[in-house]
Picture 1 (cartoon, one colour):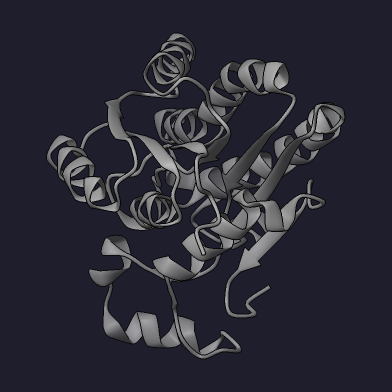
Picture 2 (picture 1 turned 135 degrees about the vertical axis):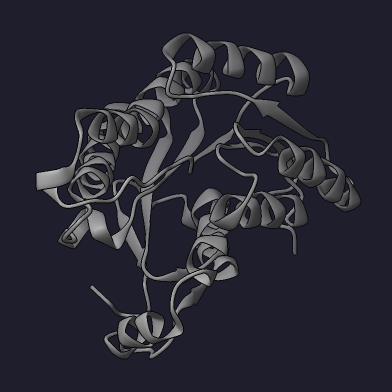
Length: 247
């Protein structure tokens, strides 16, 4: 059963990791998929090729959503290319970890701009389309770190906590127009980023997870498919932790 048949979705930061898997699962479920990438041009182009296999319309855009006018142009381009926009997954994110004592202003600003300001930019632009349609879904990717904090990640945790507060507010603002806004908060998920970690460090982390393992990108993507679909039409303003019981 294809849960997103005929819908048009935007997934930001989809060249690798969780974003890539969300784009793939959405295409599998019949969605037309627009996605963005920034630094990984080759990976972005490869993904566009790969997703063609599912037989829906797919297009990648090189775009920096942390810049207000670029986000506006992006949404206009998607509507011109696809005709409309039904679902937005705000996934683009970076880390610049370090203890507060050593954290530079630039490290703070960069993480805030990419992780939090980009969501404001994209949501503001896309909500205009959804308000006209009187329907739409936003799914914003936060993190368990945004809920419980983490030493050495004050900038990342603040940006991810900000996403939760922003999303709950937007759910209240846009609910009367039948626009739903939810948050997915992944825990320790196995991606290219975690593959380079020392196995002993990973073991230490997984020991503290009730399900005793790291999550897979498919498990986060499946939660996003559910929230984007008509199976979740009465769910808004929620934070869904996909974390094996960490929280």
